[in-house]
Amino acid sequence: MVATLANWLDERFGWRKVWEAIFLRKIPHVNWLYTLGSATLFVATLQIVTGILLTIYYVPTPDHAYDSVIYISTEVLGGWFIRGLHHWGASAMVILTVLHLLRTFFYGSYKFPREITWVTGVFLLLIVIGFGFTGYLLPWDQKSYWATTVGTEIVGVAPGIGDWLLRVARGGDELSAVTLARFFGAHVWVLPAIRLTEA
Amino acid sequence: MPISISPALAKKAEEWVRLGAVSKVEPGNPTLFKATVERQTGWITDQEEISAYVLTDDGQNFVAMSNICTHLGCRVRWIGDQERFFRPCHNAVFAKDGTVVDSPPPRPLDRFETKVENGVLFIRRG
Image 1 (cartoon, rainbow over the protein chains, first blue to last red):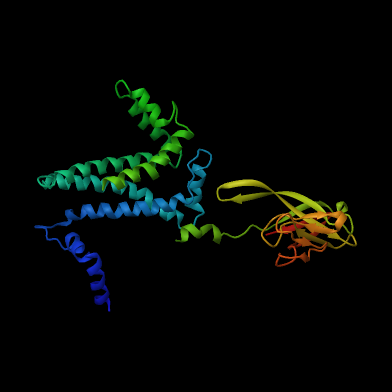
Image 2: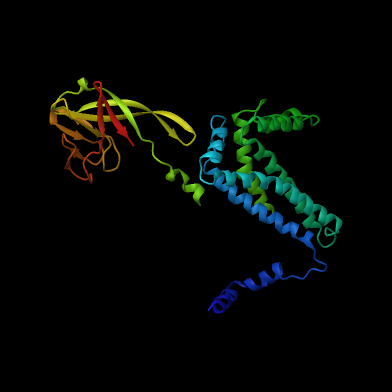
């Protein structure tokens, strides 16, 4: 019964070829370091799911951001768990992506014919850092406020256009409601969209 | 996902709300009382005005009715000349005691539990 259905679907979608290409491909000298890539993919999926759930309650305005985050952690059923996964998952993303990059570098896996994979990977790392940087501000507590003050100040020391870049990053001269709103927009719309177009 | 249905599982707040002096109720005429209550929704605490029509025949026993129509939640209004509650939506009409005169409402106006303490009327919200 199951086999009949699997065959029926394979005749129409050719899924077995895809399955074989992804999961049954033989790699010489496999070790645990080769799981870093799929570990990254797993945590990324976790971040998407928990992030979507958090937006059900989170509000990106100075009036309500902090209160809504506290509400998630203390009132929402299982909210502390979802937020915890998203919080620690963010750190895990950065660590796993960097380890995966190091593995690729030291095993020489970036060489022909995989140069493009390396370039895409570097962009993905930048996107992960962008997610981390924008997401860090969203709880709107003292730590996130000052971390973003410092982080955007760094943008400001770029020669020539630094001042202008700083104002673009903050949406003004100071950290404000505009900053919080644009960081939220970048975190949940812009970066996911770039991420989708890239891979 | 439990996280998304969480607010629906919260217990409703129940409390006695002070309406005002019982002497303000005109016997035989539904009298509108308004009270401000504190309301907690999510992470926001707000003031909310609730209204009740209070009816008494003898000045001893009180009936407090919600002004929220039992059909789809519009507010009803007592029109003294016609001795009826009218509602702007769907042309519903309720009698003085809250019974349905003209459909579509499925049941009479909801009643609050009442109590009187030192000449002050309270209703139970919840």
